[in-house]
Image (cartoon, rainbow, N blue to C red; front, side, top):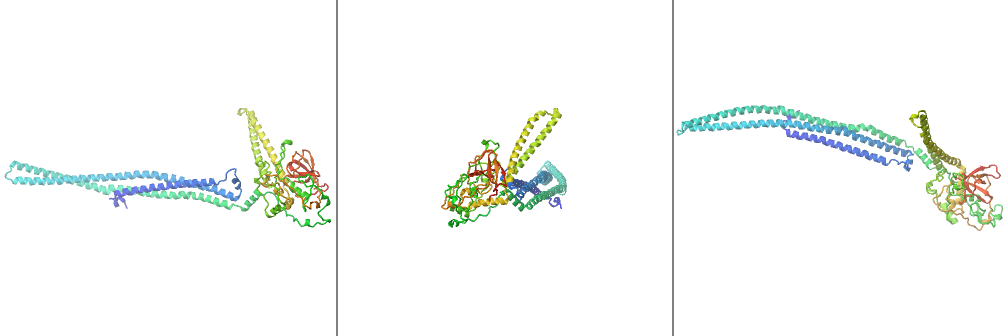
Length: 616
């Protein structure tokens, strides 16, 4: 099967076919080039997608990636980034292994094709020239033969005419002989040219054209083979990255299998655990008792309560109480501060003592409305993040629940310790360098490092002071976290007070025993106990006994409702310990008691004191 023998007369069609083959190659190159552009675009879009959903630094999203589900999602994003990289590899390999090679090959193929068809046209032109020579000699031979025939006829006519002179007859004879000679010469020339043309034609159809067409056939077959190899390479490029893409997908599966729902649930507990205990049971309050007024040993009335003034809360005077509620318990709930205690001052100077923000002032409400509201609605427990003092978070995180505050303080201590370690390492490096300078003065001046060394030491001292401050707060929080039973009793007392008719918004504002508050604290609270007809029938209970003493470490100006002012160095009685909210209840005299920040006093408990007991 050879184009030279089978297609000897299809020169033009072969020329068209080979040009079509080159067009196919160029079309395939264009296809691969567009595929590379798609791969690059796809990889770019995948990278942008991965980048779009990456957690932003120093944002809330970064904290969310503590959870295993979010970590799995982050691993998916990273694997997709690697996945995009493999598509970039596909694009690069297609460009280098297919597009570049085929582009060069097409140029070479065009040159080779041009050369072959140039040789074919040259042979074609040669045979056409030979054919033209043959035709020319043939026509000349034909013309000479005709001229010789006419000259012979003219001679015979002249020779037969008796009127023509002998000289004219001789002249005609000579002319006829000349024409016959020319015809013989043309015949010989025609015969020679014909033989030559036949030889050239045989060479053309059996040697030149088959050789040229065979070369064109080989060129075309090489083109076909090269196209097939390019297609194999095209598939191989994809196959090479398939294992890596499989590893990316396996990484996504592995990350998904690493999701631990129990661990995530534990992280939620750690993130939002407040450290509080659930509130205790609300005591039943029998409102039918005031209607059964009997004078007996169990009667609630007592003549000692008659004629006493209306109570003023804050520990300034004794007053009449609502039935079925212990005086000290009610006073503890209604007069305790609604803000976290202020941190201790940096110095003992009275001017440096900060005062806590003003207590909220709540509008008065009817007793029945307040009781119904409490019984029919859920307690308000607002987000602690909504509470801001002075528009910013306190340095000691006192606006947070105990557990969250402890975590924040521990985190801060760890950060400061890391900074201290960095500074210490830097100081050690500078010290070593200074020693080197001392041993080898030509390397540098040791005195030039003194300023830097002093600066580093100063930074270390500052960081250590800062760390000590936060460690003190941390120790205070860890030492103050209430036990479960004690906190339950405290919260039980709180909800008991909330359910009584004497509690208005002021009591409800203090919604958690550690001093967490609602967002309604922008107003000052006001508590007033309305007088009833049977107030004078109830006895005043004895005040809480002292359970120890305390010494004021700093001066505290107790301007908020429920607090009491103390002077540095003053000794007072402790009647109620800190229950985890940062406040300690103290008494100066029989009629003057209130709360002070625990960090402002040094408490000396006396468990063996007369009448010492824990108030429930």
